[in-house]
Length: 99
Image (cartoon, rainbow, N blue to C red; front, side, top):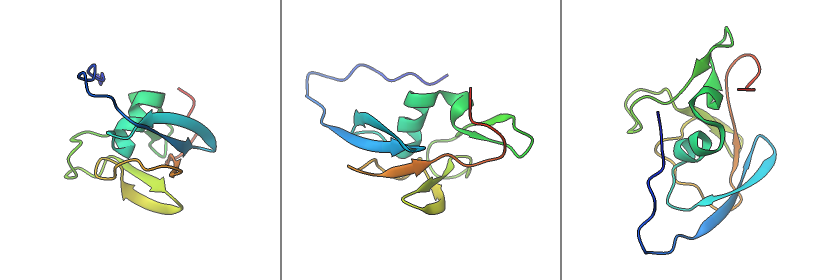
């Protein structure tokens, strides 16, 4: 569903983020939603209360399907928040996030 395109000849800087307590290095050009999708795939983004997978839909702030906890603040729109060095991200939703 989602696939990152190869970067142009311009070098991309990476930042370290923490996703569910684990460190990851991601390009600083990504939003939080894009970074989580890159690291966990669409089925690992978040869960419905019944445990079924749930993922961002519009990636432009209209649908609210990208809600995620960023730096301890719940229900942030991950598609509108760029990743920054040291950011702490926690996936939301019921059940296990294991894909």
